[in-house]
Length: 214
Image (cartoon, rainbow, N blue to C red):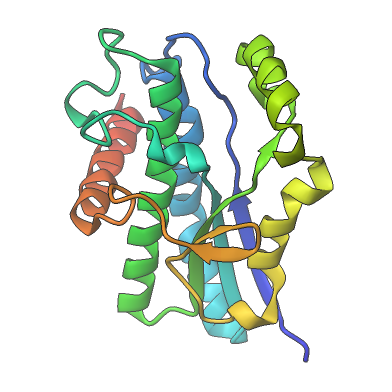
């Protein structure tokens, strides 16, 4: 069976970094891991829709999330103080950004389905991989690796789930799902909250629109 697809992957950029803001004044992990992906997707989406319509080929969008999405702030997303240093936790802020990846994916999928567009959107947890992404917590990660070495993946193993979701014929038309170890999994309660996803979508749109006017 030959499956023709096209698409792109949004990957994380920073993890567990000390509190800092981007040049635009946005908390670094939220801006890098979610908002940048949200904006890139928005900029490419019309072209993807047109390509899917003109060619009949399925488009696939993949957001790299993490199992860390379960460890976030109590409210899930700190909409009222997203950029505040007060109460900032490097671990929870990372979890917040990874939760945002799943919420973004699910809401995007819902909108694409409502339009009847031949594009799917899914999120994945690639696994625990020792890469420079963990440079802000290298001592902690090396310590944990001593006791959990069997659970760590090399880079090809870490890429497996992403490649599976991007390329496997059995996932044709499958959208709005969260995958781990090449299997569909149930994300956290926050990640499954449709209202939270719609709120994040509107919140993210307002943020990027305000930046474009600045």
